[in-house]
Image 1 (cartoon, helix red, strand yellow):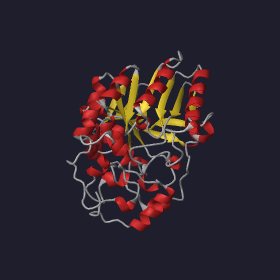
Image 2: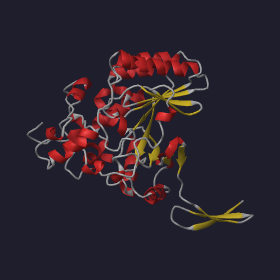
Image 3: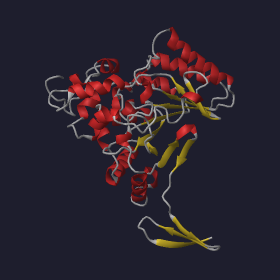
Image 4: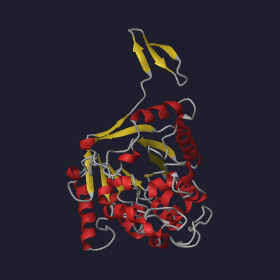
Length: 362
């Protein structure tokens, strides 16, 4: 891997188990293929504060240093130049009654069951936690998960649990099975979601054994995270197909990223292709003001323009909700273009997708 770039058709998913993929992930700028032009010394300085990890599979998709996939995966010196954003803008820590649980909404909790990922995304909303203590091994880690399960069991108002992290699918199948089976014994927990990016960054993780296990816990919903059409490959398509064929509903929470997908045509292609692989576009997130990610944050009007462009040009099933997550843990709010231009007692004037002003009787 040191001597030549990996090509997109050099897939690792057929050659090694997903555990080996994780073990072979690169964690240092010096391990990037020699064909790439990088300042190893400068990037190494970044990784001291914000660790790096890229699966061989995802690395194989990267074509050059301007690639939208490169920007998501490879450290950038601008991460250390961000002085305007916060480590925990959503105030997750104050809303954590026990270390592994975030309880923001009355009936819903986020259960942080893993600190590992197949790739450390440079735009990560929990960038502050990357590289922290591993929740996979050891008595201390197991205690955090047990405390989380006990908290959920004791709070009967909680009817939905979202497994997140890190990436829950970086847990072993048996360990994940134990967590899901325990949650299913709580009568008040009616909906379980898993948030994972492995469908995009490590599709070989979606093994037949994993799918058979997950299928036991219906209704089960999986939200994944694709940000660019080139992330939809034969391997990721197959991973989504396996889960969809098992009756598991798939959604996508895309993040609007400057220099990656802040273009109406790119976003439209991504949303259309997601629907083709049976993944419902769910959210288009405006990036949170997380320390180290300022260079990814576009003007919010860019998001409005993209949403307006998609409306009427794409199937309604392709169009996600454009969302912001309010600082201070105040919750998510949908952002909608201003289609209503004026009101009167009997009519409203609205703008259609072509920009035409039309009257609508009340």
